[in-house]
Length: 86
Image (tube, rainbow, N blue to C red):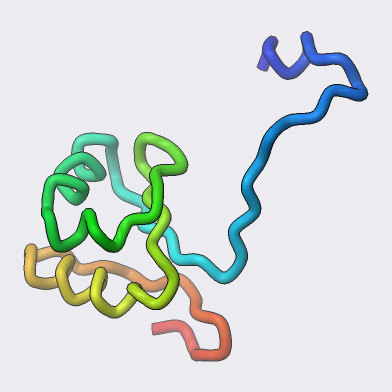
């Protein structure tokens, strides 16, 4: 919080805007690391937003959900654009 207070008002922050993306929110950082260690899942991850949040490549949601289910997880889809929530 202190860092944001030290910035001057006109200072610009570099940000990247992602639209219509899928995120995987894990319970903890260890789970996110476990998912990234899976070769099949890692190729569908575009980036890591925090230690618990993974950004999924566009169009790869179903593949990620299938792999999570194969791993024994029960992923919960919060919302989808144009589709009803599961």
